[in-house]
Length: 398
Ligand SMILES: Cc1cc2nc3c(=O)[nH]c(=O)nc-3n(C[C@H](O)[C@H](O)[C@H](O)COP(=O)(O)OP(=O)(O)OC[C@H]3O[C@@H](n4cnc5c(N)ncnc54)[C@H](O)[C@@H]3O)c2cc1C
Image (tube, rainbow, N blue to C red):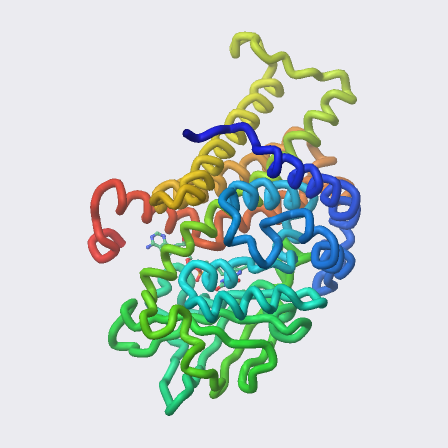
């Protein structure tokens, strides 16, 4: 039976994350927005050396923990309440690591765990997007060609989060998607593990972005990058594209949770400001008797709560190892819509001050738009839901 009450373990860890978000992250949020491409090392070192021991989902043995996704939901929400860019700076297995943990061989999983025992922070990034394809992953052109006992990779990947941290600043890992047979479409797609400092992999550009400026996003080039055969994710029995797509089921609620953290920050901040101006929200009063501002706040809170419930349900399904494709896409699509609208409304309610850089509201609006873009855009997640509900394949409903 799903419970909405946090276990003691989750509650303790959530409170610890809250102290980091309040005392370290939020006070520095504007600094990193103004200094794009500087990295919050104090945060990364704190997480690596101290916080990982107190927050299970950040440690190397996260996969062994039976409330893992529920905990991850709360931690992502909390860190992002401080600043969503920081959540993408976390030295933890992240999206690439989730792929390895879900579809990797035992040996690949063990190698990942070993990396997370190092005494220096380590990152894992994931490269799928190319200049001509992001949503349609089956159109990937990066090539993997077998040559003796190696795979040789060639191609260009865009918008790779924490690529520099994974490949240059740490002894980390890149999980890269490539095709072993371009004529086979999605059936030819596989994921490969490229270790940091492998010859032939390089970063050519760091993006300048609308938001999320604490987080680094890079262009990665693979030029005759030679990796051992055993670095194909999942090995010879790799489930390829299908297995990799299933991994997004686990990643989407994590992204939705991050968006919820920002939206909660907006609602709390606006309510505090209204209270300072003597405006208190009257709950339990018929809607037609509320002021316009009260109605706006009540609507923001209702949407935030509804999305929160949907994400919690999805995290619970994943922890129970039950199918969650529909809920994962639903909660991500809903979060994308809700959090962007809440951020916009926050600015509207604060008037010109909301539009100024004096407050974080304008930054939150820029940052949170990403929830509608990465790990499946709003449209793509709606497509996934529609296909599942109506019983169409991806060929039948595009
Ligand atoms: C900050 C940031 C970090 C990122 N990090 C990573 C990362 O670490 N690794 C990585 O691989 N990628 C990453 N990305 C890339 C991101 O995942 C892609 O941008 C996203 O999947 C969309 O792909 P695209 O940009 O090619 O847009 P497109 O696929 O070209 O889509 C453009 C528009 O068309 C719509 N559209 C496309 N197909 C359909 C359809 N069939 N029906 C209806 N509408 C459709 C889309 O919803 C979108 O609105 C990141 C992006 C950003 C902004």
